[in-house]
Length: 186
Image (tube, rainbow, N blue to C red; front, side, top):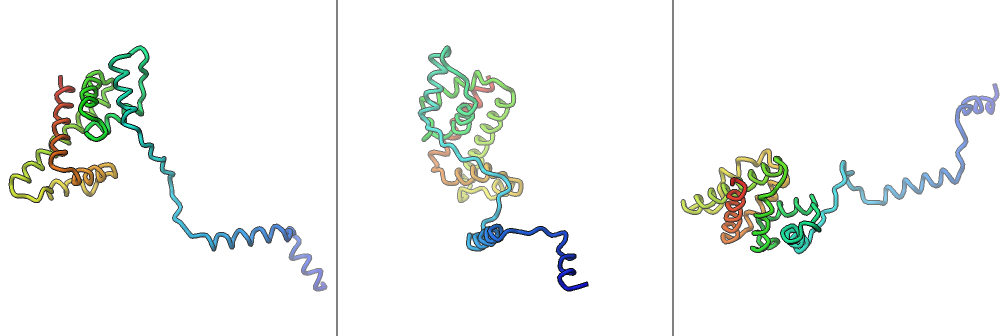
């Protein structure tokens, strides 16, 4: 066999690739090399939506005064429940509407979660109060160690937020938690 016949035999199964395709592939590989490498994320994070506290206040006012036009909104309800202890986001007037709203809260799971959260906040303040009374530095080391291993991201963020609160704001959160417990236990 001649040399050209051998080449034809070896290349028989291969397809011809156009020059423009080869150039495009090379350009793509060079672009990959030049671009900064970032770790691929397994899941896409949803963009955090920042709700305006006045929207929640309007929702509560409409629930209280105009039930005919009021329409249930799960996202707004979740936001209210998540932020009801924050005096900056929900003032005193809004919180009094929240307590009325919670009395009519539907769904056993939602009520259970709200009671558990309020209980956790009230107990956390009591532990903090004890550590302050015994000459502690304000951080209960034992309480901090309790859930660090299995803590979720939300719990960790909550601990960080709690440490940043002033004594006055910690007390406000405690009072609100007690009020929520009082309302839901009735």
